[in-house]
Amino acid sequence: MFPSILKASLLGKAQKKGLVEICLHDLRDYATDKHRQVDDVPYGGGAGMVLKTEPVVKALEDVAQERGKIRRIFFTPQGRLLTATLAREWASYDQLILLCGRYEGVDERVMDSIDEEVSIGDYILSGGELAVMIFIDVVSRFCPGVVGDARSVEEETFENGLLKAPQYTRPESFRDVGVPSVLLSGHHEHIKKWQRQQSLERTLRKRPDLLEKAELTDEERRYIRSLQLNQ
Image (tube, rainbow, N blue to C red; front, side, top):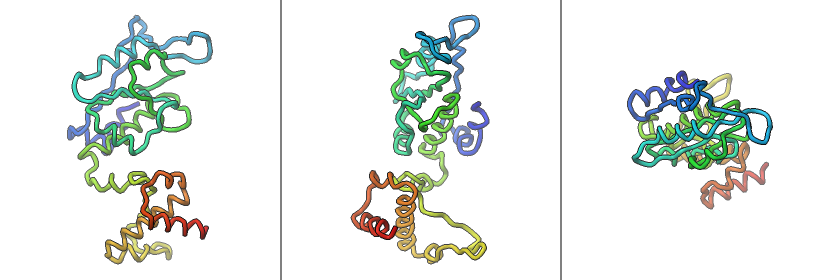
């Protein structure tokens, strides 16, 4: 499932440049029986299968390097929600070991070898592979050099706790709808102020929950209150 995603776009370029290294490991290589079985029926009954302790723990121990900062992460709906803030933190580690969940999850004894549980949302996937792919893409963007222009990362949605302001490019007018004049003014301070206000307005309209945690000035709080009064 992984090769086409990992070879594409920024991830592919980052690996060629040696900025990130991504290694795939098959749990079946750590199975102890001739059928290379990595799952079994759950004790106590119930639907589905559970990933076994032995192959998972052996894999986690085998791939861990004995140097630098290591974080062993398991992907499950029970984990902490993946955010830009956490992604920046994880990008500072020398090695991340990412365990994909499957079936009904893993034997609970595996969790003794896990440092952190991560979720990408309140829903169920057929397996953790898609969640891991998303995680790799998000975290890699915070590794130095992966994104060509560092400003792209700094100015992204959620990076300052708010949604990003509207973006425009050529043509200047499309079906009688023009680009806001302030963006054509060349006045950088005015543009910056407009973008910040637009970011506040968009966040209030689409994700007001984010405003509770955003770092805002007194002036910005007054601006938000004025918007709320006019709603």
